[in-house]
Image 1 (tube, rainbow, N blue to C red):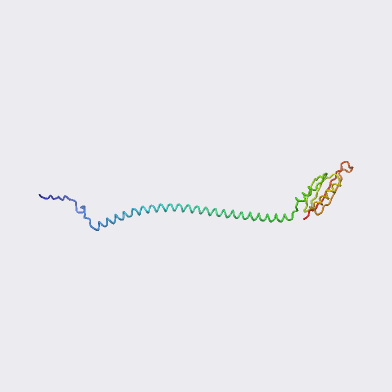
Image 2: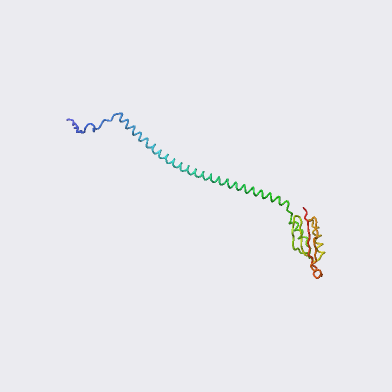
Length: 190
């Protein structure tokens, strides 16, 4: 039997005919494929890193904004603290002035309390004034004896250094209504 031979019908010019793959060309193709295959994961890693970088940059921008706000708040806080310090200094000054004034102020409450608790039946007060340590008491009484007794009761209270009757005037000289207007000066103890 005769072997069948293939007829070569390749009528293409030499430049279009398939070339034989040389070892160098095969190595170059493999190298190119390896590079392409190696670049694909690197490209995806690059994309992931870019996304992370954008995220970090966004967080950094937020942190910078927050830091700027904190600095503004810190300045405002410092201003408020300075105002508080000024107000505290004013309060301290006012308290010192109050202490200085209160040392010179006569104690009114104990003197007035003694004036009221020393009242006798038939004696009515119409006014009390104070100048420094001196209390002037005006009132009306049923008789001159009641005015004298009231002045003695004030002296006996122990609240006053000196008690003097300044005036004692009968409002009804005919004696029909035995009313007496009086004025007493009482000096408080220091």
